[in-house]
Image (cartoon, rainbow, N blue to C red; front, side, top):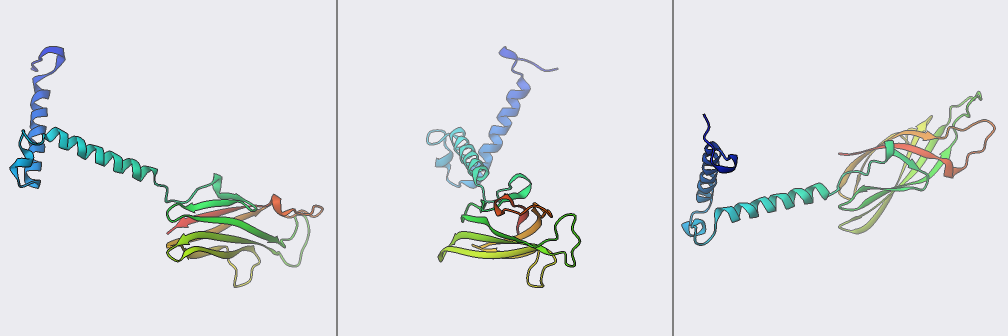
Length: 190
């Protein structure tokens, strides 16, 4: 049987609240060795708890607002000459800088399959100041020096870039314009 005071406040809830208050008071007594900090006349436990909750909430909000991960674009699609942010602190960007496409056009019979090579430009800030680095990646019949996956350390972070596709695929009767190109690039922050 539960006894109720006015406004449907149960005695059980009041006892629980007092027990929690006592546990908090004991915790702070063990953390702070001086009794003057905990005395009712100098600082109330409730005020200390409010400050702790406020600091915890502020830390949680600042952590949630901090964007240090990679800017995941729609399915990793990046357009020709487009720049994306890959890290906020320190700020690093990646630009789809150039493309060369020698793949066999659709519907044609070719002796060699060809390849699509993309140039990426990494720009950022490090302890030495502003830095930039070019990376070349390739899909298709590529030389031993070009690959579709590159591991790169840049501006204090380790990245893995995986080139998934380059579109459009050449057509037999159409000349490709570089501004029409997009690539699907998976970026992992290791």
